[in-house]
Image (tube, rainbow, N blue to C red; front, side, top):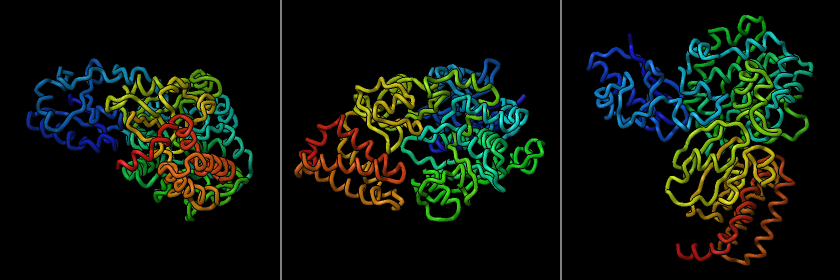
Length: 518
């Protein structure tokens, strides 16, 4: 019987030589006359262990990592095909504490299965949610999503079921389902991991949404920086169509739904739903004034459900296990799980899926192991480039929508970026404005002009020019941008700036000396 070896084909693993490791394993097996089958999977999300290879044994899947090509021969000598001892041996992968402590609902299959095998997907529970949705019917399916408390995982946290119900209630000759996979926030990679590691889950979730609201066409808008994810997902669509998961009769139901993947052109602003719709229509990615909401008049003026990858990917679990089972995870109005992404200056970067309510400290120190440099944590930015900077004194803040808002922050897409005590927070505040100035669609004055004036004003503060007056001017500018911008880019850019001013004021005061020293 052939030994089965699992090697990830996720971008993170490919970047550190997973293809070369897979090739070395095949070459060494041939040289030794050993019969093996290599299965390419997604990533488990333990990035410091990549390439993480796994071997199927009687005791379960045994992991070894990180593995370099020149270590493969010694792995064979150690008997790794039967779980033999080796300095890189990790034991059963599911018992690794980083994984064992998680509550994986969305990412339960990622890294476990062949992402392009429908049969593998079914063997590990795939399509059960869609099958139940077909039995329940549209109205009951939407009620299940509403009762689960699922909120949009793209950042705004709007109730997913409300969007679906709104679109379902409108009579139209055409409705659309649009997935926002324009994952542009710093330190985020959950969408990419799922697109590459479990693409049928997203397809299943979008099909559930489509059949619930009466849509027959869907689009997945993937950021241009994800060429590998785009290629994998596009192949997954073809295989889903061939298997009857997409097409004129979804799973033999007689109801149609088909899907296309589209590659963006690199604009951060297209992560905002109305700019994304403009881009899908072949126009320049600019904000649309609301109302009307996309749920009423979205793509090509038709009723459109726009949700994030993780929102759609949550639907199959909810339909399979029930709304109550999902709502049992989390706290308050933040129900279910959130895939948090640990990045920046951190020892153990990767994906951690937990129920809402865990503390920032637990993520950064408990899972992340503190900074990679070993220096003290000084700041943690949660929620992407428009998220607030939290000082070490706020690490016990719970990670749920309400607690983050109370702390003058936001959860966003779950990205967590760590900085040690060498960071210059005045420069980070400047970067927030600089980023906004570069990525603004230019439609509204507060964002287009305010971000540029923000860079100039922070530069004056750093240079020590009339500091107190310019700090007050900066606060006024932030208020105008927050209240006057058409979308979240201009409206939230002040958040990191104001948090830096509030928690790290000393950096703005001593900046001139550092600039002079440079």
